[in-house]
Image (cartoon, rainbow, N blue to C red; front, side):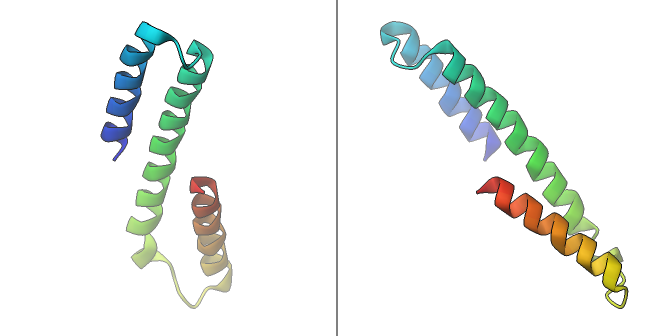
Length: 77
């Protein structure tokens, strides 16, 4: 998904070079957002991969995972 988003931004940048609808700052911000998306996706992958390691009887561990999942999901929104 992130590769497709990057491709869209590349195309937008090329098209924008002809008619300048989007500012360079806005385009740069979108590339930064894409990098943040990639980091967040990696964080989610790590969390999901470690799910089976969580002791479901340890309330603190379960709560920590729930809070981290919530943080990631709300940040995606």
